[in-house]
Image (tube, rainbow, N blue to C red; front, top):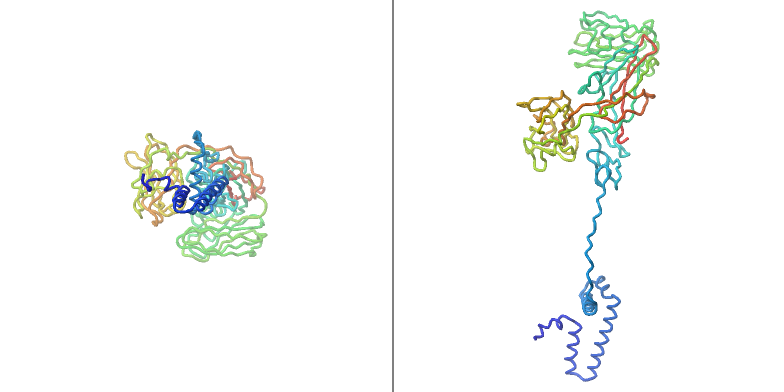
Length: 543
């Protein structure tokens, strides 16, 4: 056997050392041989002792050099020669720990995208709006909850546009609605139109008295159908019209000396109208004068007096300028005296239409890679559909079922960069169903909102779509986070008991998308008409 083929001698440093010791013995004396052999034996003893203490393994960890590697090799050789072959233990397959989830199925460390602002924190659902965001219409509060408030309107401005007042047992009943989109038979409701509302917060209101309602009036002149009384009938669509331009005057007798806290005058007309409202006492002495101007569109001006003007018997409107015929649509005067009171009650929609779009099959005229049609109907606001054209503004997103569905509402939620933004959001569009051809269920022109919910007469059809003609902001191609289609109807909870405090009462009606408000107004003075001056709703979610 050749020397370079002797693996054991070539690769085992200790035996290599002893081999050269024997060569040395042939050429040296007995003394040198004895010293060499003794040194070799001593070296072996030291190495074995150090191996038992584990010094060399430690040295390798500390140094990582060739010397440490050498000693480790010796240790391995020693173990191979002296240790019995161990019996292998049976393999143990570790059972993976289940991922943490909250009770609603949200993974630990994640947001529930369908129930913002909830976040799963080590198995506990907690509000965390700074990370998870809020439902549409809500803003993130410092306590990580979401909040919103709404002034439903004021009778001074009649901004709701949908107050209906009737008399019942000598009381005035107002049923108010903020949006006329959905009107169940016989009732009107305020639509709190958000992604979802899990609970309501508080309601507050103020009342006043319109002391000018149906009071005796006179004017410098008037035209048939537009007599002076049309300006005190609590109807802004009617008016007193002098039949001529300025100057002209109109006057109302309040029938008593009253303390006036505010005045509202409404007028409209293509040519404009201007003048002043003067409050007079019983002897026609001037107590206050305020100037007003009506623009080309319908105009309402409110004067608030602080402190209230006391001892007012008459209100005089002097029309002094403008290119239109002298006129007043409405004059209302409110008093701070406690004649009016309101019995406020609420009811909520305990059930409502269900979004059925996720149960259908989605199609689109085109799809950007990674943004398929199905992302626009999956009920997940973290995904979105987008058309393939980089800056395209025209397209459609369709949902099909195998059978006809009675869709009564449709909702779109935009968001190219964030939920609800208007980049790539439809501006002019139609909600359509297929019946031998595409038929419009609802048409929208000039939309400027990042979310829009539309109601219409339920129609049975197996194919529904949103067809878009233009977008609000073309910085992003036409895109939708969600196109939702609703099937079903609303049912209402029983009316709550009347609320006690007008400055803020906790709403006791159950959670729901719609909140219906019933206000029963009464007055202790038969000559004074009560007004529901304002209604407010404040919501914190979760409660």
